[in-house]
Image (cartoon, rainbow, N blue to C red):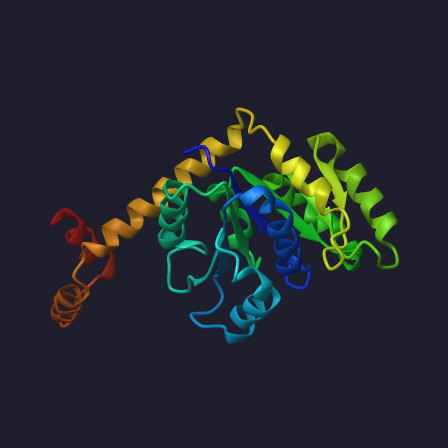
Length: 254
């Protein structure tokens, strides 16, 4: 499927849900079909964040061409889990025009979202000024475009200019938005429409990590935890028991 998957990440409080809401309004014009997956790797049921998304996106729920799903991924091997990879693939097969994947943006999930997405948008706010040097390392690797949201705040222009200098070598664009009023959203939508994923070496690496995660999940499923536990406690009774040797034996036996 050629459905573009657009990843949206960035620190909590950057206004990602408001931005996604504004993007849906823009992208769903002309009866385009939009799917939104809001991924929260921090909690199996984080009422605050899930209800927050629901309330912020309330106007979208009556639109027949918009599908929104919140998904918690705690307990998976990585932030985004095999489940969300599979869900994105199902949505791709369902014939949506755009799939937006928003993460709450904590640590590893920011980097992992790039493995799911054709285009990764990193949302920042002017207050991130002091952290601009830290932004450089991790997020620079995964971003295709930076959005400075809440750009009506003091210091937004200086922050956007500094960021633009920083990303120049990576040929990345910086777009200023005020998601609550819809300002700058047209530019974001135009960027998404025009985006051509080049032969990005990063994508190969990300495909590998995506495949690796699915393989890990499948392999773990095949292990009967109860049987493993009883074998382990049995063997552990021996005085010279060694956990590493036990694991080695387990692997040989499979």
